[in-house]
Length: 329
Length: 283
Image (tube, rainbow over all chains, first blue to last red; front, side):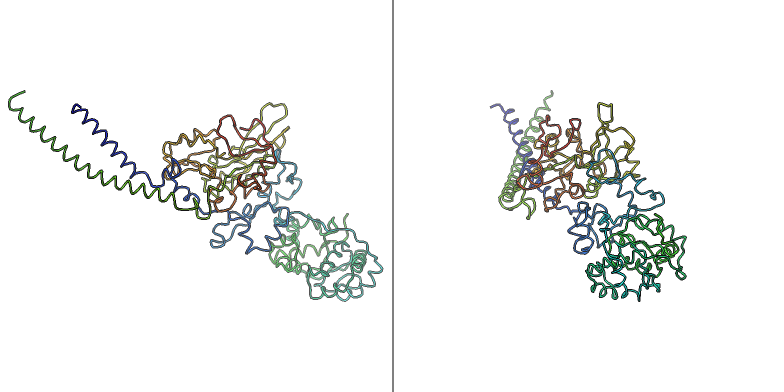
């Protein structure tokens, strides 16, 4: 073989060997383990830490809230959809409670072409005309249990039978259902369905009160119906209550958040919810504070009362005590 | 050529020959050492392949799963919580043009042949959301005569024959054994061939990191037994995810109980995102 050919061949062989050695050194070990890629990148990608933690993560600390939410129509909307990803919570601080509920809720519930008919949708301007003055959806809807369920409104009691049973109530609630005391509620003219519901709640233990619980436990279901019918039939007209510390004008502004259920002046359209016009201010203050503290349980009122300061509560009480309890219907 | 130059030439040749011999010897020694090293390397490689057990993590064996995704467009309400969740989960740049998943709206107005199509990145929708970092569909067809309208969530189809993989010049893009198309961001050189190659527009270039990005079906979540973030966030169950090996998984039931279709079947890519309730205009 001519010399120059031998040289050429050996040069090629040397280059091939050098290239092979270089490739072996420069290619990472895991390349070609499964294919034309670096196998180590798979565990690297798999090792990233999830940011969304799922509702199970929330359950341990927020048990009551999770229980309420998971029983509601919002159960398919997980915690982190509204509150943001939970990674780093609680170590790095609280998760946000959305302030602009109108903006958040309308993401899903604004009536829009293209949304399936099964999705509950609203025309914001008609559904909540107070949006412009800042009234949030959460004023009426508890985001963790958004459906507003009115209790059964039928009460079939005997008022005269109720009158006899009511003797035991008179010492606190007044002989004619007008409370002589600022702390206890007047019952005269109250919605029968509401009275029956609350008495049943005391009886079953869903609602607790040192004085009311034993009294209500002594009542039969028929007694409750009779009492409700009796008090609902009384006239709510009463002498104006004593002085209040709150500012009624400020209370009127706040009361827009209550108007959806309790009516504009505290006389509502739905008998499942109480009339609060002309109610004892001390009682209203106590009740709102109890809702705020979670001592009295109601999904709706818990949400409403949560944002109220002591001053707000006093203002609201001052507003409602000044309203006429006579139905404007 | 002069007489004096001849011996000089011979001397030079002799010197070069010596040099070549020395170089060859040295090369041989180095080469032998290197070859030895290579053999060790190869041995180490084949060893790690034979041992190990489950891959890629010790709790997750990718040979036991085959993932797939379902989209029920008849359920989608266009709330874009999936887009929000994806951006957060995967640290996707918070702007109005880079998305790993997105939602399109198809609106057929009365008297028009073709649908009007927009997505969350449309300027009108960005204006409605108030920020490029938040996403919502503007109610722009509120007063129009809409004949038909629907929303379609989109994402990477994790194809059986991904064209994006074929064009990658550096082996940065691959399909895993469990059916997910992933990008090795350490190897990606940012050439963007794959962005061009994807028939679904599922990829984008991240200028900040100099790499291509796309949906991974939240590989870091599914390998831990979680759902992808968009599926987790969807409030109406329009997104379905699961293992096709498991006949009772949500995706197996979804494919079995519905007449499903894929996008652009004619490309031969073999997409693994299955759609229900979309029109032929959706591609």
